[in-house]
Length: 298
Image (cartoon, rainbow, N blue to C red; front, side):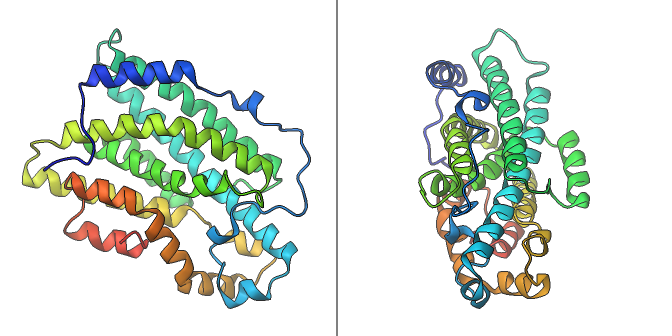
């Protein structure tokens, strides 16, 4: 079983990532112009990423309705990002609790926690600035996240966190480049993408190290846990309330979103890099495939 990236020495990787953090890190409270007006003619996110783009309902909507919907969708995505950043920080701190604090590995993990703290505030502030509800995952999933955060560790935790971060990353790479999108969304996306590149590299190498030599039984557990987390993250990205809050008929909107082949194809294409990596380290197989298919990643 060979990872799709070369796994270097843990300390070597951490030293390189610490140097990168020192060269280029961002303070969202300074980098984002939180006082700038919110343009009436800008989408909340890239319209092609809207769950209704390409449907009959989308074609019937006015430009103002499309903009309002995508602002709610952007707020929903940000709120899920915030929720998972908090879970990630908990996992990292538990993982390094008993490790040598002089090691570069632990020092980068703590640097990442600092980054994630800023990202969490940034996501919260973005939703507030767009004057959107505080969505977050469904209450049941929120409670399950608390349980997951307390019990899972090692490769399954790093793989799950990496997968969740890559899901956000694949969307935000489009948001940050799209001049049709609200400036606040673009800047928040740019900061997150640039800093998460380090975090994803860190997590990928840890997955490669910790999955190596895993027994058959452990591999099945790692596969299932990772797939379950990805499934719930994908299902949580857009809360159903966004449709009624945007002034749409929620029953029709939910039905059309479920059938939206354009959205399914967009997720599958954008998530191909993530799925290739998970497959390369043996984390795709058995029941996990069914879960990935349900959220259109396979």
